Structures are given as C-alpha cells and as structure tokens.
Image (cartoon, rainbow, N blue to C red):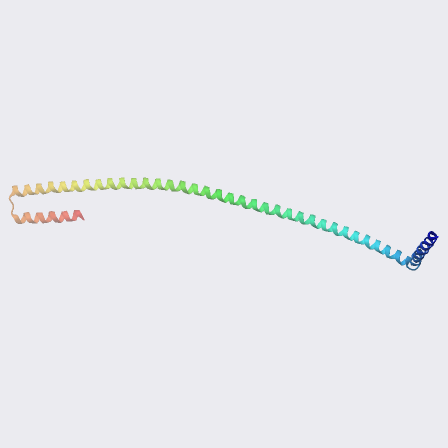
Length: 177
C-alpha cells in the first residue's frame, strides 16, 4: 500500500504541474508565441544587420586597402621620379664639372703658352733694343773719334771744340729721350 500512496502522490504532483502548464498556455500562449516570433524576427533582423554591417565594413576595408595601395604606388612613383631627377641633375653636374675641368686645363695650357710667347717676345724686343742702343753707341763713339781726329788734325781752337762737344752732348740727350 505504500506503493499505492506514492503513486497517487506522484499523480497528484504531476497533475497540478500539467494543469499549470495548460493554464499558462491558455492565458499566455498567444503572447508567448508572439514573443517567440518577435524574438526570432529580432534575431533575424540583428543577424541581417550584422551581415550588412560586416559586408559594409569589408567593402570599406577593401576600399581603404585599395586606396592605401594606390597612395603607396603614387608615392613610389614620386620617389622614383625624384630619384631620376636627382640622378639626372647629378649627371649634368658631373658633365659640367668635367667640362669645367677640361676648360680649366685648356685655359691653363693656353695661358702658359701665352706667357711663354710674351716672354720670348719681350726677350727678343729687349735684345733688339740692346743691339740698337749698342749700335748707336758705337756710331757715336766712331763719330766722336772722327770729330776728335778732325779737330786734332785741323788744330782749331779750343772754343770751337767746346761748342762741338756741347752740341754732341745735346744730341746725345735728345737721342736718349
């Protein structure tokens, strides 16, 4: 009999729970169903929004990566252009430097040659002047000796000789100027 009592208690215990569930179903069934539907709809909307957001984020990320790649490409082209310009400028400077060195060497050689030519010209002019001066000096000595012989052979007086010597001295002074 104890078994019978426990079965009855269990039947009584399960019966009120089932009845309570049935009452809940009757009273709140439609609202529960509506809440479950709203939750499912909200979940679906959230999943769709997350999917759209994820898609939008991926699109923006792809666009940003594309923009970054394009900017890097532009910057690399600018750097290459700057490098090329720098190399061209360096080549022009090297060429100009080589030209200037060549011109300097030619100018130095030309100047050295000009100095040698001027030195030779001055030497020859100096020698010519020295010869002319020596020739004139010899002519004057010869002339002086001739006049001296003439004076000593003609036995003229000393006054005439003094005048003649004064005239010669004047002529020598004029020749020197």
